[in-house]
Length: 115
Ligand SMILES: [Zn+2]
Image (cartoon, rainbow, N blue to C red):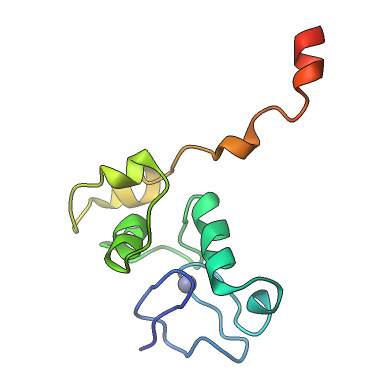
């Protein structure tokens, strides 16, 4: 087993290299990490909801727990209030969606004022 340097999933079947793909965050090593470093890929994965990539996630998997035990600062209030290591499957699938980042606000404030 290997640990993903992007999302810190610790049960990767293959090493984080040679076009192997993390089943958790979906990073394709040798491709995706040519364009962005691991910290940038991690921020992107978090900003898109830190969703499980390949098929269904393990029943006890939780992205925010995985990140917090790895020492990653969590940017979302919903993540900070996470209460335990064994959430229900519903929590994993539905409850872990953070708020959209602030950068998704209206990029055309002038148009909104005119309307
Ligand atoms: Zn990963």
